[in-house]
Image (cartoon, rainbow, N blue to C red):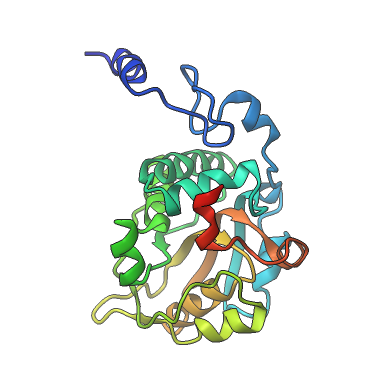
Length: 251
């Protein structure tokens, strides 16, 4: 059976809905309907990947840092944030893969991934992975991999500790909370590689910085970052801190 016909039959049985507005998706639409896709608060980071708001977040904090890309500006409780909530809190792993594919196609077209050797998703604490059933960053990373052909390596860096969510913590608390949260896996290395660290949302960058410190202990490693959303300090502070996970389900 042709894939197109199979998708149409599946859409009849279980219609795909827009992750932002909830409307039924038309043939050819992915994750977001055409209207919502046009309304997304998209970044222009692919136009200047080495010098944008997200890249600047890591200047002076990550050794051998290269470039950064986020699909959208993340604003808690906004329509565009619903897709992230669906992935993290409602078990919709496929949405993470689909958004990753969209990101991957755009990154590839812009030449962003031309010199990337390997993709490293941010590891999730065992407690969180047990609750969700998957690591959302891995799903996004696999979508990017599907679009670019770059391998995902999820065993290079491991979570060494977990001291609670980053949600509702200020900048210093976030940094302290993840300072020793990661470690390099024994026998695994990315020496001489340009790695792309993938996360769902980048706010203060504390998680990425803590992970990158472990990776850059190895010789000749360069680091770049990609995420669905970039909140940044300005957006984070103006929103009264990031979403409270306990209240997501009431939205």
